[in-house]
Length: 493
Image (cartoon, rainbow, N blue to C red; front, side, top):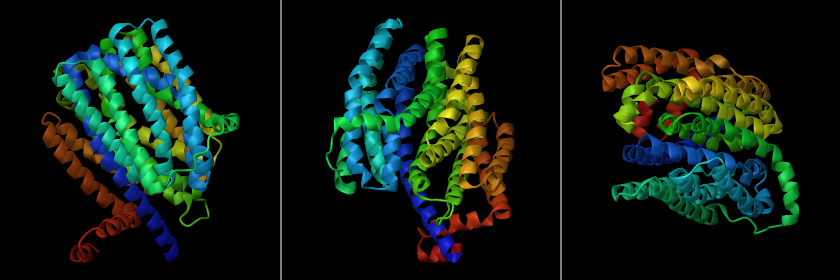
């Protein structure tokens, strides 16, 4: 048992290290992106932001076929066998480049046929290069995640986000508009991609330069279920903005874009956790040391510990958050923010469940789960947007994600042989409920509400965790005690 605990702790510490590095980079990147978005909102208003949000959503949907699910397939194979990179990596890159020509041509034709003109069309055109580079970069990110080197992914991410924000804010200060900012996004993507290539070469090793177009048909067939899953996932995240743009005014798209940007600014936590655990999901089993069940349970619990208080803060303090972030012109977006607050937690849980399922089962399992969720989301958007506009899109996302979590976590639990629910969810959820009470009472004084809520959450969580699952609390204390000076560590122990 001691050896098993030691192996579990080693895996946990490795995951915490990778999560911490990726999360730190994502915080820097998200703050940079958020700052750019906030400045852009003040400079171009709701309609300008609406054009920017639509372009990202439209291209995000349209360019999904370029990847063809190859990155998810490659990550799984390389995590299991590093030698798989030699036959997959450059074939995946070459296949993406070949697919980009017809797909981008169709995207450009589609934006014209749908009647988008002027600024919106121009943003789509200049943003396409950056999003293509992002898609190519996902292949390098897959290599970093498969080899459990989140630090390398973090480096390129920081370069891309910080450079894009710096260039974009400078352009806005000089009097340029949203089209120029979209073009500078592509410049930042190019810089981030260059750093990722250099990191791969220096720290992981460049796979053998093998490109065999004759094998692409088999590669596409093998990764096709992953591609279908990617299509449905993109639809779930992007289709609401497109539907909004077709039904209501561009200002509503801008408000929803602002609310969604707040939601998106928290998603780095789920991505960081997924990047840290996904390789383990691929190579661990029910009888390994540690077991896949214990590792998955720890990943879910860590997501809850971090994100439950974030969701409470967004829900209770929606109005001041929107006002501080985007200005008083976007005050009406607070309703959508409040509805999206629980989605902060749901999205992270769905990400972890999906990652576990597609690395251990056929991705068709996730397709059977995701496809109905997309249909529900589209139906809810069409029913709710005409009367509720941006709040309707937010409500549709909330209902969809709650249903998604309920189904996905049940399938994941069956895959790992069951979960211990009380130790996994008890302390974070109960502490979050305790946190909400003082925040609601002090909502008129936002900073006091924030301080009181975080203090109550921390105290309540420690007390509850000591009662419900003291072993996890001891693990955290011992892990962080390793980074303290010896004298302090001995006192902590």
